[in-house]
Each structure stands twice: as C-alpha cells, then as structure tokens.
Image 1: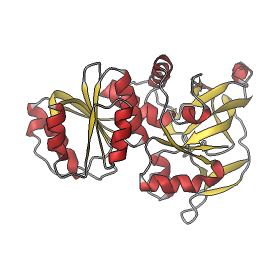
Image 2: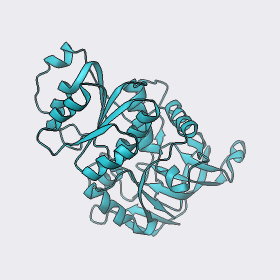
Image 3: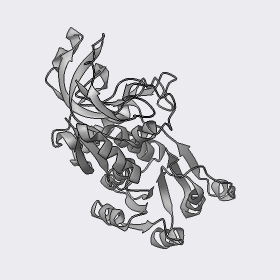
Image 4: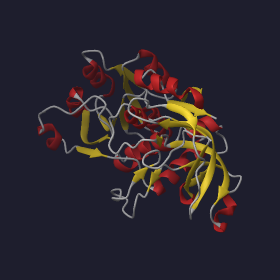
Length: 331
C-alpha cells in the first residue's frame, strides 16, 4: 500500500510503498477514504515531540470502510463506514488517562495511508450526514475540544465562552460545540478573516490578539467570561485571568506560544478561578461527541483537501497556520 512515511529527521514526509498491515487478535483493517492532520503531526515532522520513531506512519484522524477483521466476533463491522477514535488505552478513570495511554499515529502506524489497522473497540459508525472529508476531520481535535469545553470547563447554555486562537482545528470545534450548547462565544485570532468566519459559525464577536489593546477590547465586549479555552499559553495568557468572571474555568491543552511568565496569582484565588489541563478524552466522551454531532447535524469545518500524495503541501500550510479548520487528505 502507499503511505505518508516519517522516514528520517532529514526526510520527514515521504509518500512511498510499504507493507499492508497484518492483523492480530481484536484488530480490524480500515481502507482509509480520508485522513486529517493535527498540530501533533507537524510537531513530529520537525522533531519536537517525545518518542519519535523512524520509520513511522503519522495520522490520528481517519474515516473509511472496514475491509477485514481478525476475529469472527467482529464480522459485523465488515463493509461498514466508520471513523476511528485515536485515543487508545485511556483506562478506567474518567479523571486521568492511564500509563498505557497512546494516540494513534505514533507509536502505532496511523491513518496517512491507504489502510490502517486498529482495535475494533475504537471503531464508530460515521455520522450519516457527513462526507468522508468532514468525518475524518473530527476525531482528535473534536474530542480534545469536547472534553475541554464540557467535562473540564463545564460549559452550559448561557455561559460566556472565550476561545483563544479560533482558527485551529480544536478552536473551530470548540466554537461549534459551544454554539450548539447555547453558549455566547467570543474568539481571538491573529487574522481578521478568521474572526469573520468565526462570526459566520455563530461567534458573538472577536478581537485580533495582535492588537495591543486586545484584552481591553474583550473586556468591553463581554464584561467577563465563564469558560476560557486556550491552547497557546505564552506571555499574553496572564491577561486572561483578569478577563474571567468569579468562578470561571480556564482550560488549556497546548502551549504553542510558549510558557506562562510569572504573574500576580492573587486574582486566581480571590476570584476562585480554576486553571485546568486536559489531553484527548475518554471513550464515553467520544461517543457523546458523536451523538452531539448527529443530534445537531453539525458539519466540521474543512479548510482544504489534498491528495495523500501531496501531504507535504498540507504540512507546509499547517506550518504557516493559515488554515481555518482542518486540513484533510484523501486516497
């Protein structure tokens, strides 16, 4: 089969022929119709991720058709249209992942290929109203945003939600989830065009974080937030604390802008704020997310679709952070 292979530090993205996966007990083979990139994949290609192995096949997000199964008990999956939960071995606790937790697409071979093998327990039926590209966009970013917003952030109808960096995959999903739940959503971005697109998806307003007075502008627009979803951190993070209502939840799952500098912590405890970290999500949260998508007929935002053979072009676009939503590859 053909696959996008992480071949070496010098040749991180190579489209080449490799052996088709061989199934073991409990596994199924999915013919990948579409896959999507995540920031995780980009960090791996530039060597800024733990546990990198060569060669590897990247890709955590995928949708396709089950074409083979290892066990008779899984035969009902044959010829089914599915999406794959990339959050593997979460464990028994809903609060924290297990020591055996791993994400599809390193160390195990991932979805940027014609075929991928996964355990049958990570299969879910593709939402019927979505095409392959839209379905493939969901798994990693959708699940991360779902847990951040609802489990950690406890967002509910009427809450004022701030999404920092709305153009990312997680940012656009957080926006769609929050709007569907009846929240009043505000966004930040370094692009006026992305703010406009967020408004079309239901955001009440947005500000450009490159402006010196962005925090003051947000304070004027919203007069306090109940939930903040942030994947950047960095120097500007300290301003978020002042923007929060008493009892607000600040949820973070990334650090693209760097570490948080020293800041005055008194407002953190004086306003009874919660600063929460999260990673991926549980099997139950994945199912709940798919139910939300089907019930509300939500359509994920796909920025651009590439042929699998043109994966390098997709990685180049992710490097520039010019996308709004997800970058998808098709076979």
